Image 1 (spheres, rainbow, N blue to C red):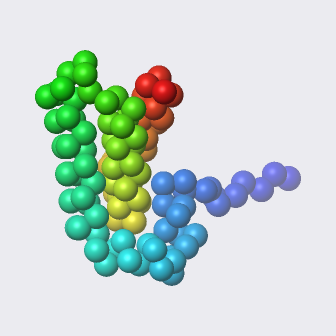
Image 2: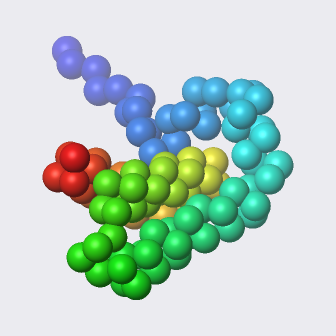
Length: 104
């Protein structure tokens, strides 16, 4: 007899479900809007830098900066349990890693 388990790992909510009392998570939750605004401003700055400087842009810096803001925004989205923005920003982390490797 095969018993089917409904215990599936939810990777999107895994960090908050695993560490609900983590001090860092609590700190980010307490200042969520500030962290989200910092991440959004970081993204605007990185894309503005590329559009102004064009081919002369410091692409490695831009990719590192863009990946860091994606990590920050992913963390905020995970804590808010916002699946759409979590997936979007995790995608930007993957794109950023490829950009960092190519710009290296």
